Length: 373
Ligand code: OGA
Ligand code: NI
Image 1 (tube, helix red, strand yellow):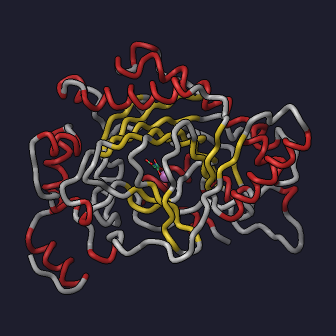
Image 2: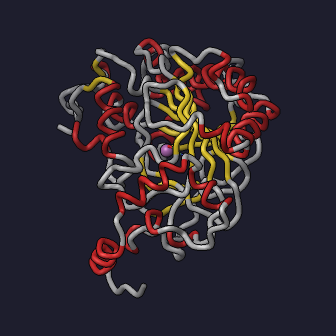
Image 3: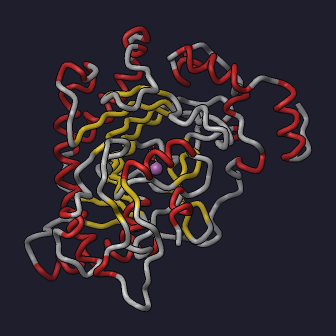
């Protein structure tokens, strides 16, 4: 197919195939992108092909050299001077990058490795077993799916990625509901992530000039969703993408990635690689924290490139109650507001925000825009 412009591309696509039935046929296999790769495909199917204007450019490399922030949490509560330095670094990174990496975070390397391994084993187990967990019913506590936004009309193309979601807080699944390969490690990993998340919320609260427990007292750590992602190797990575650009719709995200690479963050209008550093964990600010901090902390766009090499495994932990029923309203924190700093957003419930985000899908626009005053 020879196409000269994006409009021609869209027109050609519309004529040449029935997108809806191809999406449905893919979904019905319940085998995800991995199923396509296992079947030996050598070309990326049309539903995954991005219009040219949405493709990551190969010449995207930075003109400026940036150093991605790395924060050492060693001795965080031992020495007040050290503690203050860490608060300052977390605040600076959250204001400028919306992202940082932490080392000496207290989660043993063996636990990180076991979490990545358990995720990998889930996706690589017998397809008939794996299929039993495949669903689009988000009220379930365990959801295996490929592309939660597969049918969202504004999404430019399906992503080269399969996912496994667990709702771990406030009400975790009972042990027998966990798929066998992740059963032991998920409880252990979630416990560690919850502890780390609470100490990060403490640092972030202090960075806003608030009491250390302010964000936790607002229930920012009430909900925890854990998502294991599996990015299979891709025969034509330049035509598609692992994860479309998006910002996260939670308070904070704690992300574990393996050593393949591909995660990029939009910083000063350039896509910057988040280097896979063994033993480290990536932290980023989500839309809800940007909202309640009234734009002091930024929820920054990021994406994952697809790769000839793989699979790539990552585990994203979202601090949010997501689609669970909630009536509590979140708006800009009163203590941060003044005549010079009026509220920039309307208040929302976490559920309403999450429902809006899910419906819209990863279409390249921010879900925060519709709450902007
Ligand atoms: C996400 C995400 C990045 C990754 O799940 O929101 O951005 O490395 N994941 O998988
Ligand atoms: Ni994300």
